[in-house]
Amino acid sequence: MEKTRMLEDLQQRISALLASSPAADIQKNLKALLMQQFARMELVTQEEFELQRQVLARTREKLEALEARVAELEAARTRS
Image 1 (cartoon, helix red, strand yellow):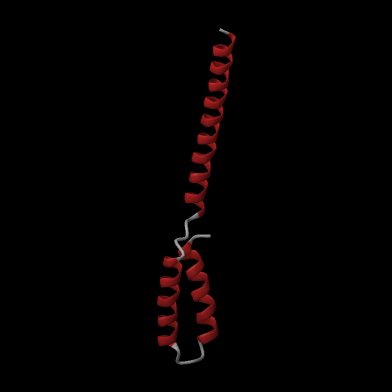
Image 2 (cartoon, rainbow, N blue to C red):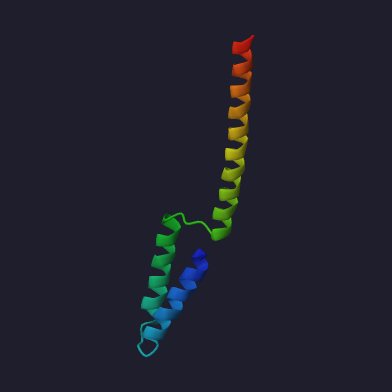
């Protein structure tokens, strides 16, 4: 879930609770506080996470191929 979607959902819930009270300033301040806290958490979107997961998978494949190639070269060297 994206940061903004989480914030919007939380804001809607808080709005529903505070709808009958004159707490608009509290709501505004709470939203600002939550935005600050989420920013400090350095959250990433699901899309960003999936992209990095794919990059890591490709990197692992390349590493395994290189390790196999090194093993082949070492084996060929010891046979010579």
